[in-house]
Length: 488
Image 1 (cartoon, one colour):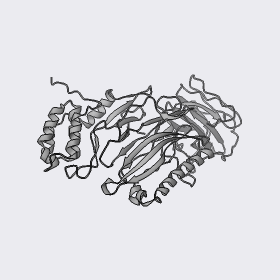
Image 2 (tube, rainbow, N blue to C red):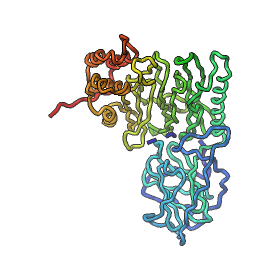
Image 3 (cartoon, helix red, strand yellow):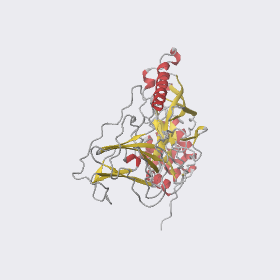
Image 4 (cartoon, rainbow, N blue to C red):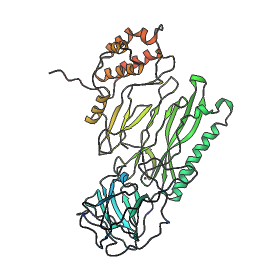
């Protein structure tokens, strides 16, 4: 359950919250907050609903908030409790871990513990001509009470450990707006996107031997797209782009870099790595954003899959998790080592922390002449998991990781010969070999079964790419094995 999704200091005397008992921040008690202009509001950059738009046109901003019906008899003082109040919709509140209720002309906004990217509430600064401290119920929960009546306006700068939003209250409507959507940041993201688009356009105008055609660009990811993260954005950008070969040997190559776009529009870059794939064979979804080590700087997870590539040497692994500091961008030091070719993001439990997955050694790219007629372009076994832990590290063999693998391989396979005899496809056969190794089947026993089915796998040939691949899987050591307990 997670994507996507990192300073401008606010004037008006910002102060940090103090830890202590539940309190109410109510600078408007008994008086109307000063009316303020909304001209400072910038575009909507939701951390939970996809990337920052980086096309040349201005990204879509917040829509007009939908007003709620104000209470018929507003009170001059806030209620002691909002139990039984009306649930209100505040734009972007859910992704930030906040909920709102209204009662008697007042709004209660409570932001609980962690937001969707791992940051916790820290402080709020009111912009109505006076500054008041709001006091959290504990270190990770923030409660605000504000006027919720026509004619009242208030802006509240709300700080999390990893980001900043502005709460705009206008009468009986409200919205939370990402405060990092500065003009400099938007322009930097638009420029990065245009640079990537220009590189792809130039690749179609090269000399004939290296010129891209429409099929080469099919399903090509939107490189250079900014994803909001804390007090800035992350993006995967192209360093170079090339194409070579003909027919089934046609291959696209890309050299990639990780880019951190700061709030002031400055860019920090680092090489991500190189990938080679068949046209249309790269899946690179949006970045997943989360502050794994709770240091106030969001990490970015690069998930991808090489769905098709020319047969040959295995690709080099890419660093999956990235972080940054004042010195620049670098792979996240606590990230697990993941196998090349496929990195996924999962939710193994309800802690909101994105967990990672790879295919271990059970991943191979097969050509059309692999042996059987139903050979997939990418033959895979089950996924292995790296479970995210509260200290920012990952476990590959704890209870959660084992349970997830057991769902994919619930019991030892009956045997390779049994799978072939039942007429199951090549994809199921590959999974059977991998699961057999995961449950401790010996290399010798799997090889014996494979060689007994050689004619089924390779036809009249003595060997073929499929048999060679499954032989390699029979010799592979899985990153996690499932122990079969003896019967009672």
